[in-house]
Length: 453
Image (tube, rainbow, N blue to C red; front, side, top):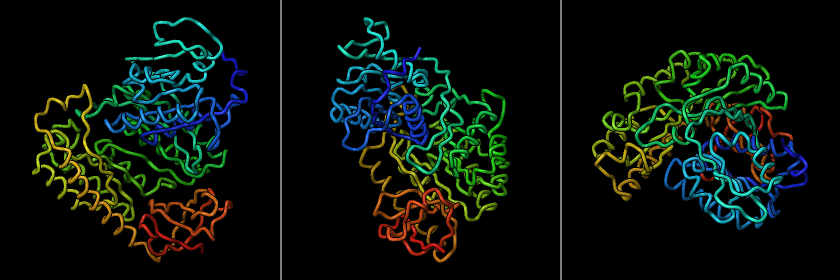
């Protein structure tokens, strides 16, 4: 039984680390709390509730999570501090010992955030088996669950224009470097009908663009015996949504049928994000990835054949165990040969309990930095070359609300970031599809300037 009265008049502060899926889930938490009478704390306000949604993809991410928790505790003394997300699932006991943390929710428990908060505020029981400690005002939980089965729906936009629709959670792949299956469980998903209904609700709220998010979204259908391409076709029929974007898709799950459908669809944008991780087949085998470089190249070439204007982002991991200098050069040359737009480059990080720790060849931190630098420089060249092709052309841009007095930004169909000068910006343009002429690069070459036609 939830006691809604304990929520009335309270303020909440949120901090999210990691992927788009985490941001989507935090936004949904915020909406649930708002429905209970909790408002979002403005800058400078003292919050009654602090929620930190964590990531654990690298050791650096773990460190940032701990920093964020300590910072929120300092900034909001006396607040009820809730920690959830992947780091909370993997290191619940570590987090529970941080001074000021009141509630640690694992992957199964986060869907019941409101119930846990209500229980914590309305009961004063002695420590249970789940409790780590008991403070005078707040019961302090640490929830750890090995068998993660729940699916927490999420379709929300937070303070962004775009909606993020969670279509899948978990992963069955068990790549040697990754802890995600332990943090989020096996692949699972809701039904197509339920996701179409959430898309319709987003449209009713004024949403025009939805990003499909998840951990391994190409594996959609594992629990409902449906398919990702069927989901795409069904969502395409929600005509009030003008744009869809697909977040990261594994290359072995990016079917030729899906590529062809997106090329001719009503609303799915010419924009793909595909994890490569390594361009060396030897390293891909060490990682237990389910494709080789030839398959990856085929997918890129097919996208460009059907959609020459497509923006293609690629994840690349550098310095993984077993990546000799020769194998890195294979990756560098392979990526250089591909018609892709942007590289998301990140260094390999040792994760406790992963199979990668059994691979003997270790890359030094110095070499990781040098390799990252080379690939980031390649990425900058590729992105700017792609942008430059569209200078002087017309495009339709979905603008996002800007801070007053600042330039306004938005994206074209093929994900070119566009900048409208502050003098021409207005709140009326927020969440509007506007025809513009693309100009030259802005000052830091992160966007093309534009003028409204």
